[in-house]
Length: 93
Image (cartoon, rainbow, N blue to C red; front, side, top):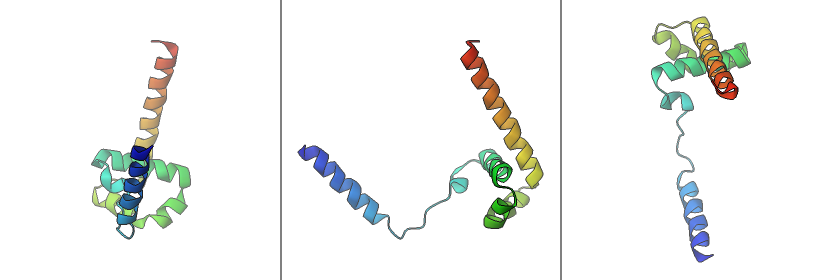
């Protein structure tokens, strides 16, 4: 029990040490292609509200020479591929 208590104290101290530090967005941690797909997927889900709330991501996308519609299409293709993989796995193929 003592070790468990020490771990909790250490976790709390680590969490407090992070207070006030700017956090990186998931977009910034992803590879270029993953980021494009993430932006496209979020746009597919949220539409214009995503664009309005994440202008920095749209600017980054355009700086990469990728239009929002293309990113959305890439996200759809990625999702369709994942669904097909899942169907094959569930089917035992």
